[in-house]
Amino acid sequence: MNEMYNMGLDLHSLSAVAILVMIFINLFFLMSSQELAKYKRVNSLYLTPLTMTVLGSLLFTGVVMMAAKHLHFSIENIVMIILGVALIVLEAKRLKALKYLSNKKEHAFAAYKPFARTLLQVEFVLVLLMSLWMWFL
Image (cartoon, rainbow, N blue to C red; front, side):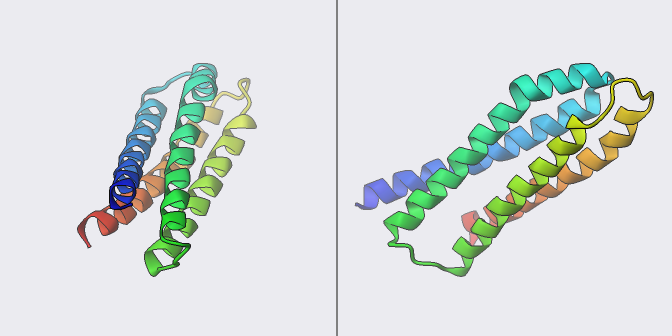
């Protein structure tokens, strides 16, 4: 039983690192993109599905670990649940704003970039702080 639980914790930690990498890749691609149409295409074809898959694996391994602990709710578990919901809401806001950007407006992408950058940075910091809390405390 302990081996299964330890493997689950390792997978959960790996998923946390993977979501940090995906957020960083999203942020890097946002900052390096110059064309809205190209950014929308790459975001919808590659970045969003990968990010959501990794986020799903993070949430799934967290739920499995909670089940292994017989749904024992601690402060860490509650914070992680709130963080998971917050990540989903932040991503939905960012993607909804991107969806309604017009390719015809000249400075639409330039206006979107600071908003999206702020959301991605908030996501990155939240996941990093939660990960550091779990790894070192």
